[in-house]
Every structure is written in C-alpha cells, then in structure tokens.
Image 1 (cartoon, rainbow, N blue to C red):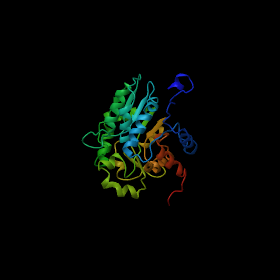
Image 2: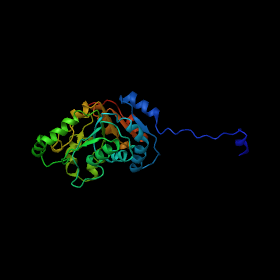
Image 3: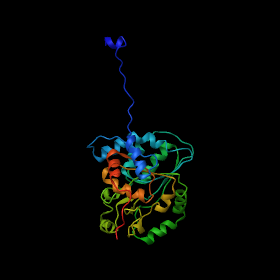
Image 4: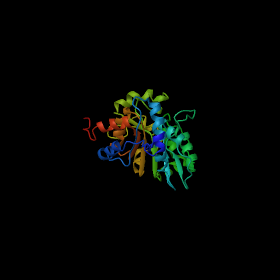
Length: 279
C-alpha cells in the first residue's frame, strides 16, 4: 500500500480480448473465409457451455453486422437461439428479418426459426416476415402446393433480397432435427446419399451439394441456390464435430464466414481444403 501511495507500484488490468486472431487469420488464408470470428473458450467445456460463451462474447460483433436497411435471413438452431437472446438491444432503421425455414415441430420450440427470428427482429427494432409452414411436409406434392401459395411466394421473394444470413450448421447426429427425433426415419437414406451436414433443414454432401433424397422433396426452407447468392452468409456453430460439415459448406459456397470456438476452428484447419470425389 505504501509503495502504491508513493507511486512505486501501479496496478492495472488489461482489456480482455475474447478472440483468437491467429486462428481467424489462418482460417482466412486456408479457407477464404471473410472476417471469421473465433472465440477463446475453456478446454473441456460441454457443447451447452460452448454455445453460451461464444454467443455472449461474439454478440457485439454479430450486432455490428446488422446495418440500416439490412434484410436478414435467419435459420433456427440452438446456437442461433443463444445469440438471439444476448444480442444488444440496438434499434437499427429499416431492418427486415425473414424466417428461412418452417417450424420443425407442431409445438413452436425456442430453437425454431420462427422464435429466433422474432427475437432478433425485436432486438434490432426491425420488422419480421414469417414463413407459415412446417419445415417438413409429408410429400413433394404437398410441398409444391405450399410453395405455390401467394403468401409463401411473397416470403420467398423477400429471401431473394437478403443482404445477410445468420444460419446454423448441423450434422446427421447433432442438429435440431436429430434432437427432436424428426430425422430418425431418414438417417440411413441420407447416409447412403453421402450427407455430412445440414443447413436450414437441407442436407449436403462433402462438396456442399444438396443430397438428392426423398427428404429434399419434403423440406420447406430457403433453397441452396438462393442462399449462395446472399452477399453475407455467416454460420454460427460450435464443436469440433461440426468441422467436416463446415468444410463441406465452405466448399459448396453455402457460407462465407463463421462465428465459432477454438476447438471447431482448430479441427477445421486440420481438414483438407480439397478432396477427391468418391467414384
């Protein structure tokens, strides 16, 4: 205390930087990602804690992506739900939020695109356009009939005007669809088709191409060709097990940047950027 009073000792606390800029730079160099965000996370944390830590520390950066007149396409998912809950309450003029996929279950869950999009619209002070449909319908005929409705067509047209997409990336064993038990009857068919990842209820192979299965004909969500045309597509995803799915999504041009944790970033850097196609 005496030394401090005499000016011999000074105590200061440096600002904490929650991001790993080295990993971010390497992801840009290897995978061509635009402004990736890698959050420093405690080793050994379970996936629930990872989602909470990454969401809280990355929320200000994600909020900065929402600019005046932004049209934001939003998927569902556990990670995006965590982000939505901690986004700064920052009113931004002219923001429109669009639901990109139908509801997974009959009971609207907190991870549904409908609920997540509503929260993001509320926090950003924007309007919210809903896609009033189940995410999965019984057959292609029903899906085509829904898609032909004027109300659905209006939403799809607004999706084509999106300037930013905030999406999740799932796998066959780890996604909202898997967690709710919706996926079980189709797993073998999707595995046979080479599915490694899921975005907006659509499954894709190692090259980022949508798997041609019966599932594809039943999904009501943004199509991949439209997603690829959105200028800024940011995947919010944690966990090293998602790395193969993230890599495939990058190869297919489905995502342009990511917000993730250290383990997922390091696992992604271990993967090959290119690979030979299976015969």
